[in-house]
Structure formats: structure tokens, C-alpha cells
Image (cartoon, rainbow, N blue to C red; front, top):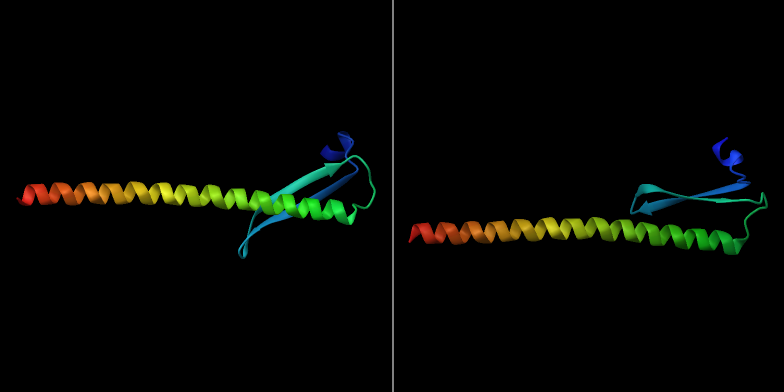
Length: 86
């Protein structure tokens, strides 16, 4: 109903697949009710792949950041331990 109220005639949902998991969906609406062309479907698939890549890069960036913080904390702990041991 929400889409019809806004004049959307067609909706394409593309899954954002990451490995064996679905990370979400990319939804695109179109005013016409026509069957989407193969070129449109290919474009939607490409957009979904790019969105999935962006999600994975964001996740990996967070993992790298947390790993760097943990490594720095461990280094400082070793330094403090060595200093106190002396």
C-alpha cells in the first residue's frame, strides 16, 4: 500500500549476500509496471554487489580498528610489566 500511494508500479528486491548469509536487501521501486529489462536486472545486481562490498569493508575496518587497539593495549601492558619487573 505504501508503494502504491507513492506511485510505484514495480519493486525489485535484491539480496545482499555475504558468503552463506543474507546481510540485507536492496530495494528499488519504479513508476512503470513493465517487466524490468535484462540490463536493469544486471544493474540492480551490480548495485547489490557494491552495497554488499561496502558493508563488508565497513565490518572489516571495524575489526581492524579493534585489533589495533587490542595490540596497542597488549604492547603497553608488556612495557609496564617489564618496567615494573626491573
